[in-house]
Image 1 (tube, one colour):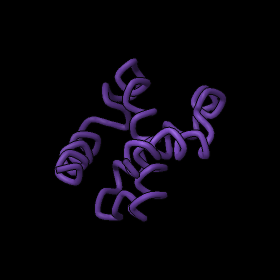
Image 2: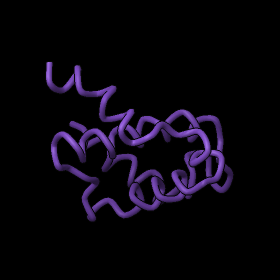
Image 3: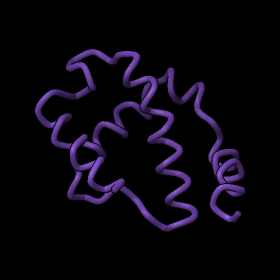
Image 4: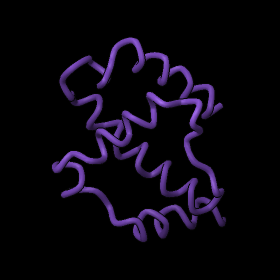
Length: 91
């Protein structure tokens, strides 16, 4: 299901990006970015999974948003994301 949603998002960003509302970052991007960041870290750590190369626009979107100074200055530390997801993943 996640891959299906990411594929849909990839197609959307391909046609409408580089951000959700086009050329300028918006509140929608600022809401989605932390969720994608948690997905990247938690699934990478617990499931050894990453966004596949077949979704280049999702990967580019994530790199673009994650590299913004406002994001890097406010994001959670990797170890905090891992620790926060541990109870949900490990039970």
